[in-house]
Length: 306
Length: 321
Image (cartoon, rainbow over all chains, first blue to last red; front, side, top):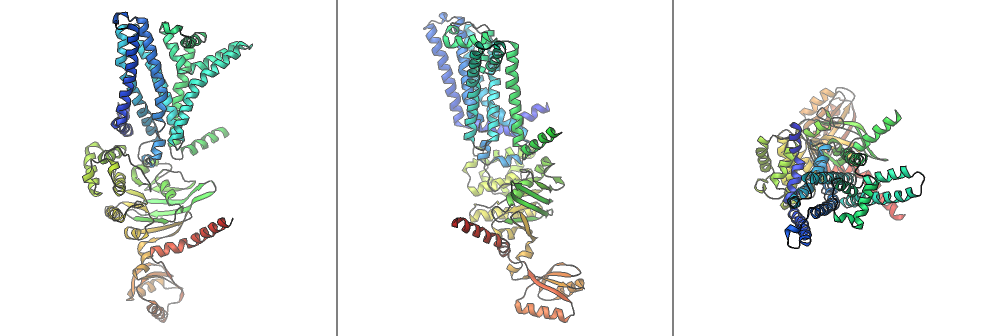
């Protein structure tokens, strides 16, 4: 109970939320996002039913769900670094960090408050779209547990991207550089893992160690939220007409070939994203602690020499 | 209340602070003077737990800054030389945020904010956004922020820098008021006459070393038409102290021991010559006589003159190259 009170009572988090929600840009961003997602959903439905609601089939609804969820994943990937990359460097640039560090707020509580306030807004954007998803429920084809599974994956992806951004923001003095490196890291994970996986697959075809290389390429794909979301949707039985389109089919084909729905792939994804986020946040806390990095280096050297 | 023991801070080969020994007594306002880059801000940052010293120790009360930073943070209110504010908060929200961060009980929070806003003359702007305040007002708000948790120690780094004369006077009056409340204040400033007005003691730092440290009376005595003189005798220093204390032109005894007496003398050169003649006539075996002190600015210029000359020579040499 005390833990919950202490976190909800974290003054920095409350201040951040107050500042963010007070801004006119926030209201505009939320309205714009809802408008875009809503328009996409309604246009999609209109094109499919052509004015006759009864024509909407559950498979089509599942397709709409897939489309919306990928749109949401893209939004998370693009917006999160923009919001979280200024978490600490922004305080440094505003010259408010020194004062903050002389308060009893520990570096851990500062980093966690910044992290939570960064993801809170994006989680709010995701939650805001739930009424649109309820349209999907209305026509069938998708059940709430499937939506929750996809939201869970997206929340973990969001948390990891936010922790990457907070990490860069703590290490770099300028928000500009921290934003660039955050986007670069996200691009490396999304594109790099896919390209590396594709390259390894190609290599495996001409190698005697095909099994090992294919296994490694499977791990590469497992690090990519696009493929993992596809694996989730494949597991949940979304066999829709979109599945047969070339681009979508290639994603689902990789999911099937490498068995990304397997518990090994999911374990790898959860470990990399979960532990990765924790490691990045802990490193950021050390970095923020005055002289913390020097202390950490000394301890590592001492440990190595032991 | 504030103490450093052989404090050192190095950045690579550059030594910003070298063997600094400070001792600021409780309830004292201590002025910290030095040129840009002398090591003032580094020292204050170490005391504020923002930086680790390379060697040596620093204490606030009995808490050591590197091993007990959490305790130190509750004991100090720190105002850096340049600091930002959260523009999109109101003055009341800004102080409320720091009050919560310092765990000020919610039952007394509002009263505390009101009291501080009245103290810094911002009570009428309590609901204004911070970005609507002038620089001077923001600086006063920063001081109020330092006081939210009612700390016994204040560390103020150039609190009046960049302020117009009126704001500087207001800031000075507030700090004088805090001195009246018994706070221990360590303040750095470039505006030396103001420091002389506010401080009980002065420390001058030059290239990371404390080169002078004395009460303001001592260093400003000469500026007030008095001279601080140091007499050294072979013996009978105590009776000499009694004798000089009875002299009509001696206004105060600053320090005395068996062989040395430091005094404040309110006379001109002729009076001084007559004073020495009387002293010798009384039979004291005088071994040394010299003047010490001067106005704060004179003392500061004197102590930093050599450094300034070296800097100019270096700059000239660089230009030639």
